[in-house]
Image (cartoon, rainbow, N blue to C red):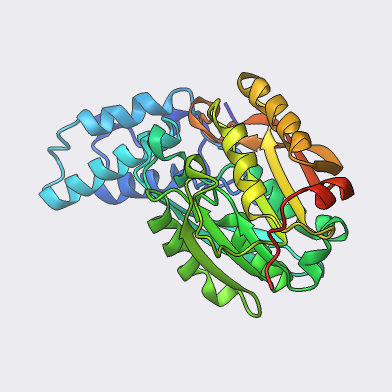
Length: 339
């Protein structure tokens, strides 16, 4: 049995109120509150469960299946069943949770940090942008270290995020560097993205943000003839389809300024299943005239689907890189700078 440091933690399931003794509604609700798994934020405050997770699903199921006949008020019984169902969903993978909010603390170039709270709606396979992925958090956290490689971030350059999802990276850039960031994603993702941007507006003191729809599959016709070219293009975890490398690079080529100071910043997990797409991305970036300035890897813990069982997470290696235009490509390429 796990150690029991105090009244605020349980070890074995047998320490929990057992239904055969007909525990009070207060006791059950208090227990179910203690069993809540807080959404992962990948920060120092994330802790492993102190409970006997292997047997908790059976315990929770027994509450859901019980009539709770000794509890007189129907509304209280409903409250207990709902709480038990929620605790069970939290232990059944991310897609089983209807919606949630998470707060991320992102470091700045000083000793301070900025807090960004994001709502994540229910997750389905067609709307993977409704989840905040590990690569987004790692890239947001790495921003101060990347500033020396991305000079436009220090001089109020214009930034666009492709596949912004819940908005963590773009919001972090606007808050940390006091620049304007245009966050884009597919039409189905934009409503929640816009809500997150609006909700975090007070955290962006000098920077600014805007939100728009952008479908890479329509590139290069995705923007108007007078589209604005950007000093910096960022993308986190952008590859989850065989078509994405071609679409992503075509979009980058369309929106990135033809300037020696222009940069592309990408971070993505090194998933074995997407190794061909990652290789193709690198090749297409080179073919488009972009050369890699710096790259590196870092590790973190993802919380997707079966990776999470009672706050147990699987370690994932992520790769990040910064690109710039090769001087020859600027001489031969099209001029998409703005006046």
